[in-house]
Image 1 (cartoon, each protein chain N blue to C red):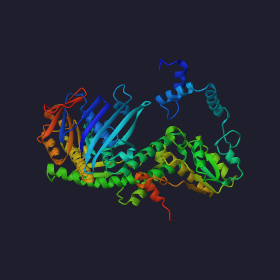
Image 2: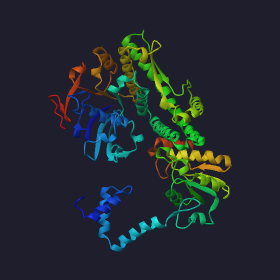
Image 3: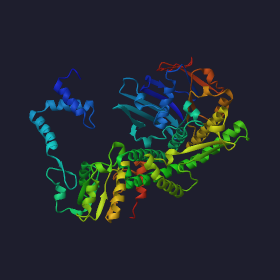
Image 4: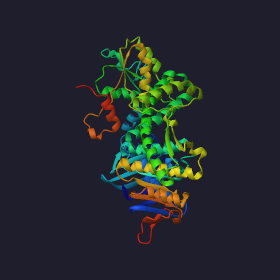
Length: 199
Length: 375
């Protein structure tokens, strides 16, 4: 991209570092930003810098917040005896979108994966255990990803929490709503069969 | 099953190739490093989802090209279909995408689109070589027969990698995490052992039969599954219980040696003649005959399971066999629909059944006088 003006090729280079953005998309976005107004460009730049400067981790659940505690932890209408454990902060927003959960969260900050150098010590596991008593938690719902690391992490937490007497549950495995049975892969279908329920 | 056409783009040394292979045996002849094996490798990639060579996947992409693609139109009993694989450079490695009838599918759903039995020079060491070679035969055969085996195998491999990384990490003293991994390994590993037990029972029978036909009844070939941990259990529950028990007992040793020592990743196949180990006491000729019996059995099981002949990919192995063994082996595969055979010299193959010869030269295929095949 030597033929491009320096700042433009620098912008393309930065955009290319983003997930799901390849060289073509990066170039398209860069030309789009260049053609827009200076105000729009400034607003985007400010928004990006603002998330870096102002967003912190909630001191209770390690979700993202502007203050000390996140809006969910501060919300008195939410049931503090229910904790939904997720791997990443973005998973909080996924569960919130479902509008079916009225408890609080706990973000681990990743999943156990020794291959990637992520051990239990790097995750907010101890902080989760420390919440159980003081918050009078009755049930921990584990909502880690349904992949190998998510499964190991879920089983591990179950083994840790079980002796405290707090109920531990795991999100069910099932079929996507609106999907067709013959499109489901074998593993999902087998797990859905194992997890079947009486009507 | 048969391949009606094969298209390669920037795959290995082929910039662009369209090849319509004939029915029956197709012999690819030419000097070394012209691209004979690459054609077989492309077909194996569609059947196994990976190369039969131990390579970095980015090496499959032609020098300087960003991506390579392999696509084949196949005809099976069930009808026609296309199967493809696109390999893209990604960082230091490569990413693969699988296509079935032009639609992107996950590898697990792609498996079985093409079934093939491969026979490559490394297989000649099946009797004397490391156990990993014999496990590879099991994994290649079972993954093609049974998708759930493939899913279990990939999950199992990942679990062992995680467990090994854990045992080498500073957290290795965390017994709760060790028992967590062992519980998962016990569940998945027991399914692998169950599938291998069943498969080996059939493989042992077919290999013994082929072997007896070649050498007469007096030298009985015995093929035995040697699971880790050693066990004779037959039911899923008993297999699981034996594995769980062995994992629990192995824990102190695994922590001390910082690696996973028990489980089907340490399985082997025992091969005996007259009750004596072929690897230790067999002559080279006896060892080679046993290898052929195993490959012939793998072929007959793939045939029986699919209800039709799998593709046969013989890469540079026939030249390694004397005339008598070559004939005996090829005769035992009677009924193949399509075979791809590579050789440096036509005389190394010396097929007495009808076949087509295709010369391979610097990434181009040249059919015998009557059929010119464009590259």
